[in-house]
Image 1: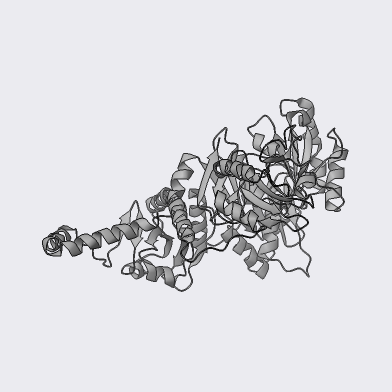
Image 2: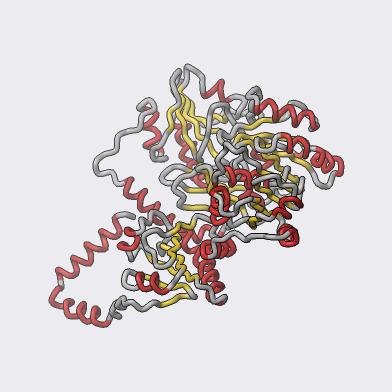
Length: 584
């Protein structure tokens, strides 16, 4: 594919040299017929209420608009295409309201001077310019939703936190929202109050207010400076009172809000997913239950005191097996006969833990949590049963139960493919892997094997992409295979004792890979539309939630050979995302 542009260029050059006299006039005529490129002036045009800016009119836009939010985009960027209708709607709403806030956009691929000036490193990048100041724009890093964008920019334009001077005003404010955060400050202009206001500007998810009224302090039993999060669930309110020697910061305020705006036991569904996975909790305790069984529902309710006991340390999540959450059950190795049960997962290392009894009780939940926090719990690993014909074919079938005895056999060199049943790239590799097994079937010292890494797990072995190929040399350390997945290269790797053959100087594989990556980027938006998924980024991972019933897995293409996999509700290692598709 990389040769096609070069070939077409050579053909064009050849025809021009062969018949230059005959075609020269024609080419000139065609150039004259072409519509001349529109000259850029200081005039500002609009597309769907969004101002179109370039190097010639950018300064004018800054001068004429007190608050100007500018999107720097690339036409080929899938995320930019997704944002486009949302951004236009936000621009229209603000314009209709007669707001002093205007929205604009800059094609950073055309306006390289502007992109360089404002250090645009990714797309889309949104920057807010206030009072024509081009030196210190404010970056927008919030959600790319209509509500979030409008609320954020309005808060920037009106940065004062609402001040409530009476009990009635506070009561009405609290009653009007599910969650509210009120800063009780004896001095509303104190340094601590200013930090609170900074958090207000950054947080577009909750409602904030300040009160310095002694009457309000008395009504809500506030003794000194404090933050109170009022909520219409669980205990109703959470107080944050800091000692005099502690400095109030944006970090500890944000942590307080995040941890206390969650329910003690959060029901898992797509609407709650972002809140769950962007929380500060590393440990998640999942309570699997059936909402149609009264006894299981009551057990879930009885677990609330335990959830409260570990608040700030473990996030409790309820998984109703009546909903379409089979992918979650599969990942944790939970079957319907196991319900009700509980599992605990460490989100940093993906280690999973189970209760120590067949029956779910408050005691078994408590014991599991205490042992995990005390670092005395043993993680569990899923395994299928060993098939009867596991070693009869050219490719040996491994499961969790026989992995160590086969792959770590000190007398064998074992080449293992870790695959996912739904992975398209694994399916493409399957016939080649079978041929590789046939080729080395007569070698007593080499075993070609495969393992379903969704249904099976191995201690100390982290599979962060599909397909993953690992070579376990006899008595040596495992080697990750990162070469091309064709029979010839795979064979050379084995014949070299687990060492990739050197590429020749005229090898164009790298160019092909780069070209493919570009194509994948172009197709990003189409894939997202075809199989919709919600994308959440956190902890250097990608969290994908299928947004239509029946989707049980997601297939993500990373640069070159890194292909990610279905994990706790579709968690993926972060990389260069070039394609996203959900598999039925």
